[in-house]
Image (cartoon, rainbow, N blue to C red; front, side):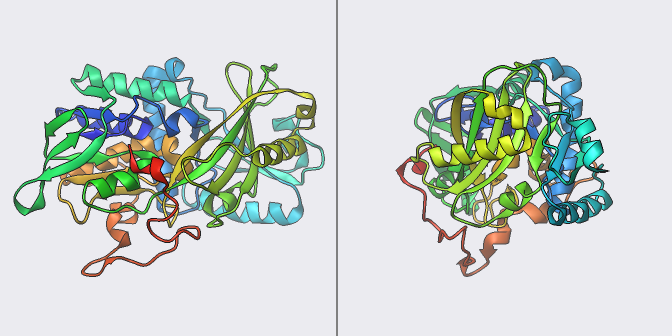
Length: 403
């Protein structure tokens, strides 16, 4: 049983069904009804700090390219690369230092002086100090990609059920999972994968465990269709700092990219709020201001809509992937924050390997780096931690109590 039909759940279902297992995916609403529907489709190595997440991202990018070889047009796969820009010399020095460390870890990075930066993106502001080009960065249309993974799973015999809310687990001898109880019935199963995104913490509690995942809101502005003026995914150098920040307040950093339909997507924002929170006009205004500082021509372009979504964030900014330390047969695939789309195929591969008791194929980060057990002090329960100012259990709201 896979709980959650977003991209991580869909990719996991496809990977597990490829092993010959009988797989059932359940979702409270339906496919791509949550975080995946509100994502930009980023497949990034540029925003990953050297370490286990960058290693996982590089592995996942290879899996995305293999998937795109069969489904590229269907999922709008664009291997267009990413351009990170610095406003001043201090930012440029920090970017150069990070790029050097990423390069040592296997990422491809080319430094860009102001002239090379404008060659890469002619419409960028002339006031920028320089930047870096990451040719491995790519993009997909996340909803199309999730449906492609689900369709692949169904062709292999999987079943997807919408409108089925996860309620509880039944366990057998030794506390091992024996069935998942849903609002549409009980299903006997030896393994349950919790891929419920920002709701996965609440789902874990229903299933007799705990998972320190909290919702972190993001906004996206969409412009009117334009000629293809922006060639790459372009973002400010302080974006990485916003990603790993523990601040409970609003964090904004410009991320600008064109789409196949001609619209321009403008991000990004981050703040810890309940899942009931509505869009914040101040966040949208700050995102627009920052985008115009990069591409001045956007100042005369109309925004036609805006939307929000919630990222599943973990306390240490690393995904939570692996077996639950308290409930044998329960696995988690969550906590990716804004990297879930990019990391979905490698997450699915890792989950399947752990269920089989095997080492993940290919170069991959050690599973211990992502294990749910890293938050457990055996014999004493959860380790004390703060989560962007939220103590454990805070900031969930009633809407986070349902899948």
